[in-house]
Length: 601
Image 1 (tube, rainbow, N blue to C red):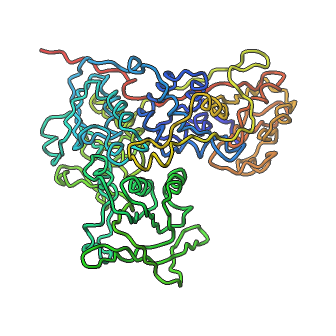
Image 2 (cartoon, helix red, strand yellow):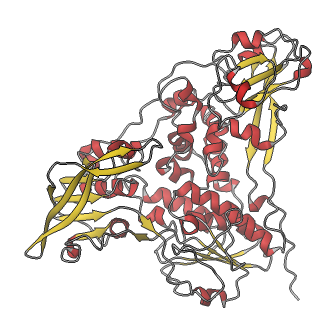
Image 3 (spheres, rainbow, N blue to C red):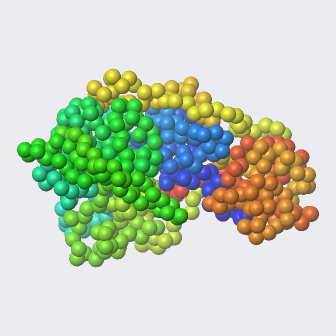
């Protein structure tokens, strides 16, 4: 293999597994260290720069960072990254003074944002400081999009959402709430320099062909619409016996909300096996804790209606069968069909995009599934001044993905309005700094100890089930948060190797607790991976390969299992190893050069 190109900023970025897995690439270890030092305001601002909604995401994020966490190399549970984010949000000081303050010098360009969800708000937050006049349109009474209409208050208190939405709107955003955009052509005709569509995936999937659907319509509700009606207090109660169809997070929100609105026999029925449900594990745990039964491997057959009233549903029992490639089939079992009583049913089997308001003769192309044709790098549609992001671009994902796409769409809109090439993206900001303070002393805590994940306290079920606005999770207190921060392995502090200093004493190899360092003859990658002290089986993580050493061997380190403990650097007699903190930040539009102000004639 050729020596690893550690000058490529993506190399060390990929080694910071948590940050790399985050769609917005939030520098996770950096803000965890700040929380450990009780610098909560600074930790909040590190988050805000990347994910825009630390208080919201500290409660509701899908946490793609956590399965990637290196702590699972040592024990079962990852660092509670999401809940630590909330600690920064709950304990921050005056953060607004650290944010861009308007009024900003106008640059003469006007941008329309259609939809007021996380993607659109991110675009507004990035473009407003550059002097763009931002007009936001949304049919809801306030900003937030699906964060407001689909995430229940017992998971996300309204005051937390309002605070973080208003940080953006207070930058001078022109808002037009309670306004449904019914025509893209009309928006284009208003002379905007660019238009961003962040309308989400507002259409819940239905089961229109299932027998009894039409007859029982009064008692059957689309999950996301029902949640919105609850959020805006159009719906305040539900019957005692409730079936929720679906196995995703929306289904979990529906069943838990039902418990708070009068449902005392709430059952979730899902086609797939329990372990393969799309809902996050913690969402399923919370539902079960609230006495909600989850019935898996049941396929709906019919809505049962008698005398114009829904009495329940009939289901077929199935089992999951997998072929040699792991592809799943749900096959009927010989057991009889199952009838489950219900007074009302909530359908939460997925969401779809819906663009009836976009005319099809504008030059904006749609694919065979009715989705706009959008460039995956630039988020530009085939109508050059129109951009998409969030669920509206590529289908339903989550809040943090919408934020990440909003950042990139804002970069594209800025480049477009300046007449520049959209594909020439600004490089990320990176930095690599040694953490050595003495011969055997580092500026970070490098010890690796067995330390089980700390549980987050919850409010009493007797209280929370009586009040749908009562937040269930109470969050870490400061002392517990500190203990949880110490579980972080600081994987952004990189093991940097200087081949010219190495005397090949093998001391680093001997002291390494995971045997991830090997001195060996070079070979092609498949062979080299097998020649290590412990074969490097995870092909998704790179090898650190040095240039040829004096003996003709090379140093190879498996980045996958390295714990960044620093023992190699402490043991090395020649400082061939050094621990250097790597900082990586995706460049945002507001960090790019501002356009020249418009000169009034």
